[in-house]
Length: 396
Ligand code: PMP
Image 1 (cartoon, protein in one colour):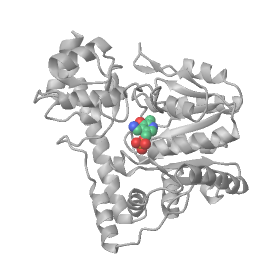
Image 2: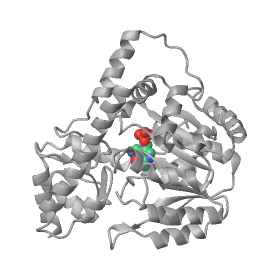
Image 3: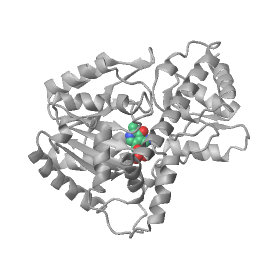
């Protein structure tokens, strides 16, 4: 017997396992559509010009490396609030929103979950079926019981709105509902504003606690359009949580830049909530890292850099949409894949079965997630013909 002799080997992360298999594949024309990263037209993770310029200025300033406040850079937190709620939001004027810099979107979800566990220890958590694979584990690790609400309708490649509304209507008051604000991962299927209005009606009627996850703001229809759900919840007068991630929109994956925002009913509430949230952060990692958030803050708070970033984000968004269009056009001979163009963000539930995904990998060196999720942002002019030909072959 040793201390660790009873420790079992944890199951491998399926997507990281896919990346390992891709790395070991010797075929020169292999394509990895299993990733969760935006690649540019040349197949590289971009370093945005706005980021480069902000980093250069930061390095030249040769600043000391002290600790940040527990909830991060104040100017960064304020910029996040403006991105989410809009500069003229009455919530911001009334100082009803608490925002804390966090370690990516994951870190924001984690501190939000820990805070909620202290507030409502017995509340169930509901996530979409399917959802980002970390949602369940994250809330379970915070001590919650996690259930699913229907979301994706495989028959229509769209939203199962009735199923979703029915499930939400049967949740007990105080239940926490995790919602993808835009660019749903993994399906790419989003709610329309009319759909959101119906969800908000149920949330209000049942007294549910919405936890919005926005990891792709700007990748769908634009920065403000993608925040529509956030702003509708704000207008509805409910208290809710928002986890922001800038991993994709600033292409700063490894810098861990995100934020948790909590909308409260009054400034007095906000002050008390902020004090408790800081306790949660303090006992998790004390305070967040500086570099990524300082860069994002510099970009968002500088008119010129911000314009550069918005243009670059627009290019990423347009490139993804062009790849969606290109795939649908090339697949027209194999069937109607028009739903891929209706989806938003980096991902698409392609409708491929796990057997078809296996064939793509084995026969063509094209890697996708077993659920049929493909990363549209990994397509480019150099690989899209091959990918479309291979998909047409396996669905024939
Ligand atoms: N939520 C969703 C829906 C995501 O897809 C991701 C990242 N893939 C995250 C949160 C986490 O983002 P981050 O990498 O910034 O932690």
